[in-house]
Image 1 (cartoon, one colour):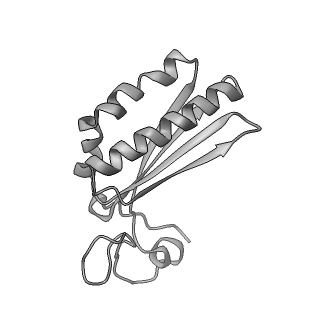
Image 2 (spheres, helix red, strand yellow):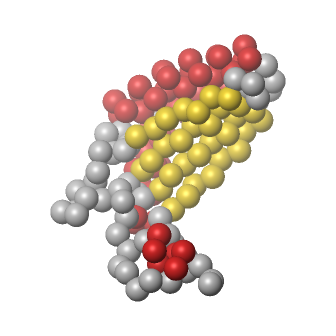
Length: 132
């Protein structure tokens, strides 16, 4: 079985940023910074569907995961001053970062089994509203 991938950016994006910190103190500082930035982003960009942190205390790693309805809303991060300023902090603290943007690629049944089902992003309700 060959998976069927049909990228559809209008189906939403998930952004995952990984922060590899040199110490727990730096990790703690990034967690606090992330909480502050998240509040600012939520106030400024109501289209943000949600975001979470996954903290690996043993590995000094933070994953920041955010869910966006479309690419345009993601670009709004550039209009949040706290994010613009905060984005410069990790490198100053010796943190190694990487980030990926993952887009909707279709219904799981079509991707995994080739089933002829229409694609409908789980970020959109059946009546066409963004799910929150």
